[in-house]
Amino acid sequence: MGNTPVILKGKTMAHFAKVINGIVTEVNVVDWETLNQEGHPWGDPSLWIQTSYNTSGGVHRLGGTPLRKNYAGIGYTYDSVRDAFIPPKPFASWVLNEDTCLWGSPVPMPTTGMHTWDEATTSWVEVTQGA
Image 1 (cartoon, helix red, strand yellow):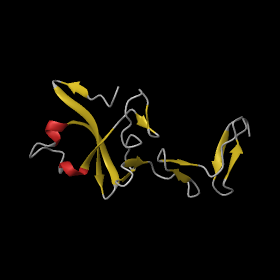
Image 2: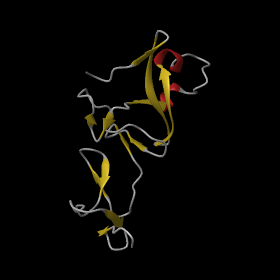
Image 3: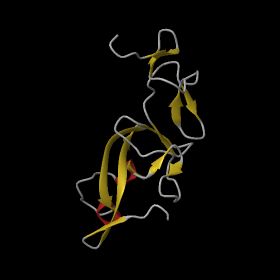
């Protein structure tokens, strides 16, 4: 299974991200025909880049071909060199995983208990109930 498009009223639909200066400003479901039609309400077709709802971390959740590492979201960056959508960096200390184009903490999260990231100490802090 690949990135199978949705068919709506006989038109092939897909998710597209509007990218201005490398930043995603909108994500919509549009058909190619409308997007490439002169005078359509979407503006310049070259600003729209297809994204896959089923792709995250470079993996297609249905086993198909992943598209642009991650499904685009408003505020994401589109990196044309990597051909990837990258989410906003959650913390200054976090690093980009080049394979997934997702941000990760500089130290692994403990595998037991509940934890939250503390940027001041760049460490995971255990969350305790009733504290």
